[in-house]
Length: 538
Ligand SMILES: [Zn+2]
Image (tube, rainbow, N blue to C red; front, side, top):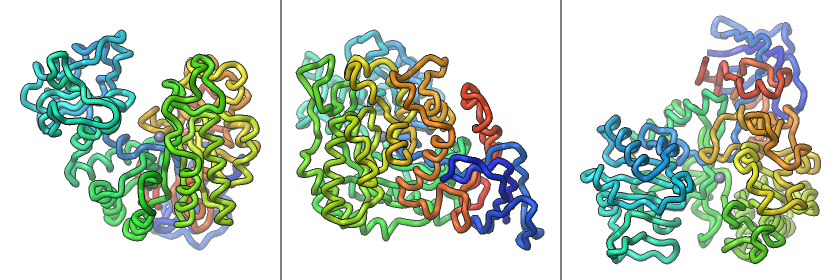
């Protein structure tokens, strides 16, 4: 089927204003964009004409920063996320028991989202309460911050963890008796459980991914990423091949962009090889990902000057890598043709990344679409450096709401002026890529767009200390289309409505340029088209 979409209100992706046009789509491409009423020989019996009326028509939304695989799993029926609302260990066991009764076919019980801070700072839970309710089936419950797991005895056994098992970082919890407690803390210990948590057959994976792609389409999202740096092993390759196959079979509903491991590898031959082996229109290995720091809330964000409420530190245990090593890593990756995205929360890590990108770019003599992720605060001297280096700022508006009051205590009055500097970076660089970091916050783009243009909580109260850093609606939508495509190195294929581009188009039920900000969150998607196929229709 070919399509002709009549769009009175068309946002094309790389301009802040709207135009009135007719989009002609054949197979998976936009073949022409013409004035409404213009004679075209394209329309025939095989052409479906869609009159969008007063609705807003725009390129498919591109969320520039998501964790596809974890997110898809969190969204699926295989994981119980209701434990997020648990108020105590007993309450959590009760919720997960209810879930287990309703899901008798699961061979493991998985949950995500319990948090002791929501349990009145009770002591960490133990396997004993889980063993009483689940004597025969392994139970894996990930904490909300993803830094610990709570297991029952069956799960400990399945993972092969014994009293003798040792880890170099983090710990495997013990009871006063010396028995295992069921707690696994920090990455190395958690990896034992995580391997089982994400262990699904190819068929199950297909179903999980497709269902999540449907969910994304219901929000008008047509491109996502996997930002957790993937390992270069068989398990990851197999998972990527499932997505590749969905594309080959013509049943993928969303484009996925992988960012694999930047650190702890000898060279970048494997990602270069995988690019050749895996890529199609639906799956790209778009670059590499690395972390310099953690999060400001736990003092693991790297600051240039000490924390205001912890004058003894500029960041605990960070940077995760030396500047010299970072420079080499970025240089080698860019030299191999692979763009790099670096997680930088605070002004110290942002400066370090900029210094490293500067080194690599000077040495190479060319600029790749490298990005810095998050940028929750910045030193004012560094704002202008993004444009000189062509490094794209990639930011998550909803995080201003998440963080609301915490940061002022951490970084103080002066530095808070440069908290979430979206507008300053936009004005200096000429763009900002926007995303959610799903599943850290909801995938809903309209909540995120609301946060970008208001910097307010959902109840209308201020969420930030510098409201002047809000974006306009036009900038926000460019951040969600054209600039997202730039982060994925695909601005020639997606992110704008133009001749020759892949036909990723959405129609929203209201014109975001004309409604008051407090109505943005009511926006509904009427239609999502990906590669010329209608994937979702309200
Ligand atoms: Zn992330």
